[in-house]
Image (cartoon, rainbow, N blue to C red; front, side, top):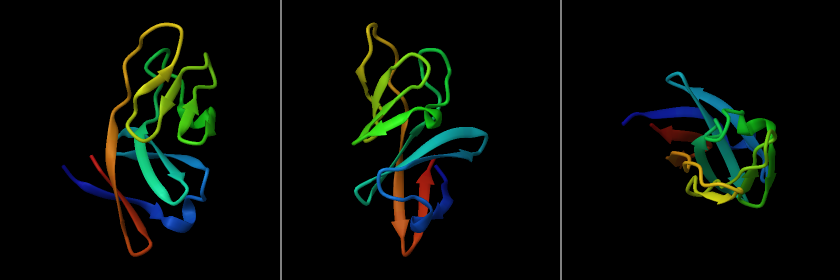
Length: 102
């Protein structure tokens, strides 16, 4: 696994999410009350970018069909049918730098 810098803490305001690309993978980085989390950005239902959806607390809702995932672990939290959970990644904050392990 490699530790990749994705930005500064000031780049990720509380309650906001941002898509970054790490080694060709789209990853969604989320700041939930000062706690940073990273999950796949691609919805496992139909391939939408979750960064185009909405964030409510730790739940990101896909803008296409409404699948809801918990950003803390990538688990599906609500959808009419069972779809795959998302991969989650370890986030490390050192000084003002945010790193994601992939």
